[in-house]
Amino acid sequence: MSTSDDNAKQISPEAAGDDAAASSSEIKNKEQGNGFGGPVTLFFILGFAVSLILGWVIAPEMLYSQKKQPIDYNHALHVAEVGDGCESCHFFRADGTFSGVPKLELCVDCHEEVQGEDPNEIKFVEEYVVKEREVPWLIYSKQPDCVFFSHAAHIKGAQMDCVTCHGHIGESETSRVYEENRITGYSRDIWGKNIAGFKKNSWDRMKMDDCAECHQKEFTVQRTDVKTPINRLLDNFIAVSFPGMEAPAGIGDSVQTQRDACFVCHK
Amino acid sequence: MKKDKRYGMVIDLDKCTGCGSCMAACMAENNVPFREDESNKLLSITWMRVYKLTNGKPFPETDVCYLPRPCMHCGGQHEGHSPCVSVCPATATDYSLKTGIVSQIYTRCFGCRYCMASCPYHARYFNWWDPVWPDGMEKYLNPKVSPRMRGVVEKCSFCFHRYQLAKEKAYIQGRRELAEDEYQTSCTQACPAGAITFGDLNNHKHSVYKDKKNPNAFRLLERLGTNPKVYYISSRAWVRRAGDNYLRNEAKPAKAVQHG
Image (tube, rainbow over all chains, first blue to last red; front, side, top):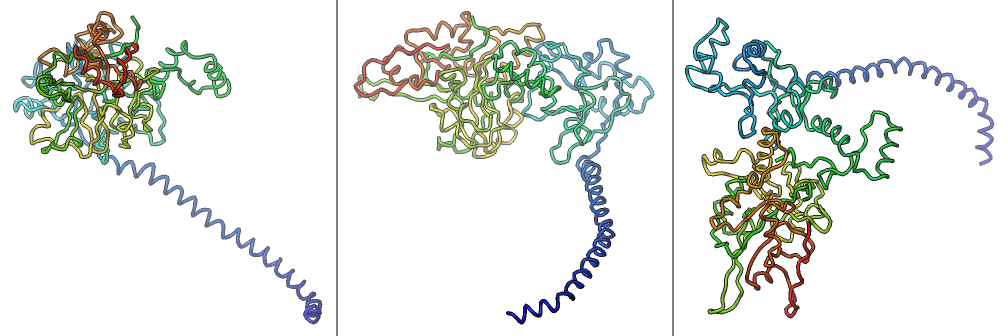
C-alpha cells in the first residue's frame, strides 16, 4: 500500500499535468461539440418542419378525396330568379320535416326544357330530366345516421338564419369541390378545413362541439336562475379568475351531464 | 299541472289478449334486428315483450294473464336515479328531466352491459351481432331510427323519434306544446284491444293521468323503488300480486306510493 502511495505521490506532478491537459482537451472538445451541435439542432429543426408539413399539409391532402358535383350549380342565379329565397327549393313540408336538397320533381317545374345556353343546364336536362334520373348531389352538410337534426326547431323555433350554419352558399356561383374523408366517408365541411381547429365563422365546421358551442351559450343564459348560491359563487369566481371562460351550466335536462340531453340530437 | 312532461303508459291487462301486435309493431317501427332462429330467447331482442302469467291453479280455477313489458322508464326515488342510468359508466343512457324518458345513445355505448344487470325488468338487450336483414328488407327500415351495431345495448325508447317528429310539426305551426294524440308510441296504436294508453302522466287532460289512479292500478316491482312510468290495471287480485315479490304469508300488498 505504502509503495503505491509513494508511487501516487511520485506521479502526482505528472497527473497534475495530465489533468491540465485533460481540461484543455475538454475545452477543445466543448468547442468541437458546439461545432457538432449545429448540424444536430438543424437536423431536429428540419425533422420538426418535415413532420409538421407531413401532418398539416400532406396528410389532410391524402385523407380527403376531391369530388366534383354532377352539375356545377349556380346558387346566386337561382336565388335571383325564385321568389322565396332559400325556402323556395329547400322548404319545410307540412308535417314539419325539412326537404333538404330538392328532388328532380321540383327542378322540372322550370327545367322541363333547356332554357338558356349554359352547358350545365343542357347537361342537367339531357342527362337527368329527360332520363328521369335523380341527380346524385354530394351533400356538404350530411351528418351521420345517428344524428337527428331538426331544421324546424332552429329555423322556426329559434328564428335562426340559414347562413349561421351553411354560410353564404346562396351567393355562390359555382359548386365548390366536395372533399370526402376517405376513412369516414363524410364531407370535410363537418370536420372543418383548418387543421389547427381555428374557426373564423360559425359555419366553418359542423361537428358536435360546434353545436354544443352555441347551445352552451344559450343554456347558460336560460338556466342561471336555477343555480344554487354556491354554484353562482363558483361561476363568479371562474368569471373573475379566467375571463372569457364559459361558466359551467346549472341543472339541465340531462341527469347524467346536467346539460342538454344526448337524446335531443342523437337517435 | 307541472311544466315538465313525464311520459308514461297505462296497460289494461284485462283487455290484453296476448296477440303480440304490440311486439310486431315495435320491431317494425324501431328497426329491431331479428335472427333466423329465435328459439333461444336469451339472445332475442324484444323492446316490447308479452309475458304469459298463470295463477298456477288446476282446472276450474286456472287463469292466464298476458303482460306486455316495454321499458319502464324508471324515475327512481329521486328523479333520474334510474337503475340503469345510475350505473352507466359511458353516459350512454340518460334520464331526461323534460320528458322523463330514459334514453339510450348507441354510439356512446361500449357494451359493458352493466345496465342490463341493473335493470330489474330485463328490458335491455345486447346486440351480439351486427343486424342482418333479409334481402331487400333494409329498404323497409324506418329512416328515423338508426340501426344498432354489434356490441351495444338497446331498449324501448317510447318511440322517441315520434316525439321529435311531433315537435317538428309543432314548431312549424308555431306551437311548443304537443297534443295527446300527436305523440303516441307504435305499440299503443297497434294494440287492437286498445289496452295500451300513452301520454303525459303529469297532464290531467291526458287519459293516463286518470287511469294511473285506478284502484286496480299497480306497477311492476314497485317495492324496489324504481318508480316506473308504466302502470298496469288488472281487476284480478292474483295478477296485481304477481307484479311484485311477496313473502308467502305476507299480508295484503302495501298500497303503492303515487309518485310524480
